[in-house]
Length: 469
Ligand code: ADP
Image (tube, rainbow, N blue to C red; front, side, top):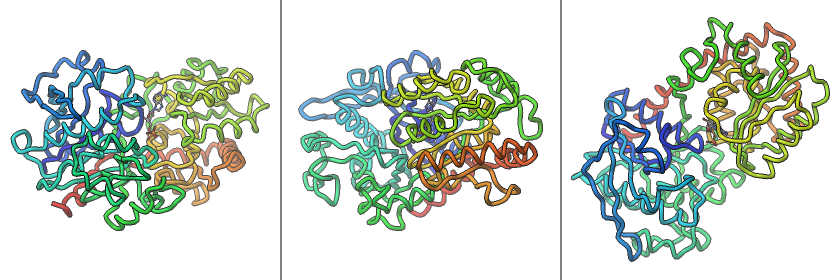
């Protein structure tokens, strides 16, 4: 099949979260399965300079945006067999310090979506599927109009919708009639995510449980009625892991290799992590890890309370955290670390290598997300032998098997109520498990052998694509 993906971030070129990992890995897996895949993404600051093999595609686009007509140069990178990445170069809009959160985000991603829809024309590409991701690419779906391609839209997180004041609608160039509650209008604003949901032939999200949750007021973020209207055409497909990037056997970020059959290197990684992050070196104390965007979603406040509750006995546990975002949460976590330097270490910032080392060096990985569409870190932690402790929601619930199911199958620890108290109890269960090395070894082994590769995900997308073309 000829497939085009549109995504505002793609690993390793740009990344703020799981969207970058997921779109990059899905495209690679589809290419490896024999499909012809094109990935379209903005050319942000610094990308071109890092890529030796990038070159002009020969395509230049002229795209109207309000009164202006903006030009975009399209750069091409043949990333690997069957996989081409096209970068949209428009320095005024994309040569910026950060990816999002700018005053003109509406203009930037209307422009990006228009460029993508231009590229789907037969003079540029011969396509069967156009697959857009999240609000930044949501408008690709209505902009395609009645083109003869299968239109697929994936929601990686319904909490981010791309809502803008009504006057931005004119910039889309879409028929005025679409500014209506049945299409793009949402409480007087224009909503890009809603546009993607309404106009796609098929809507997917990144886990089966999150797909069910989206129908509810608690998780639907105001769009539950729009999701309900899609009914069966909303499918949940669990993301996979790119094990070429996230593995413990051939990984330049780790100090020692290890795997389910040979765990020896795991404790060397624990030592490296303790040293790097400033915790006392000790192999016998259980070490909890967390890597997160600091937002309300990720439950960092709950984590701080639950840790604080259990602090005191230095031999009881250690915690290593990495994250950034909300300033209040950053300060609260840093202050906890300052007050308990022998037990809590926190690095505020973004650090790819340390993310791998936390996964490899910790014994348990804590993920108290209030909601989690799929979640990737718990999948990484399974493979890295860091037993996940997760709130039973969305993809966390779909990917972790609780200790209560028996240690023959269990891969982690789940808690039902997203509160500091419930997390505290789950941490207690983890400490009890740590005290029984044989049981811990079995649960860890089950997790390390679990297969969340993209092969299954790709096959599932193949079946879904086939239904609409
Ligand atoms: P989300 O997409 O909601 O942020 P996911 O668990 O799906 O959450 O994916 C997060 C991805 O971003 C993971 O690859 C994780 O390692 C990475 N990540 C998040 N915060 C940081 C950070 N501060 N430093 C390095 N990597 C991070």
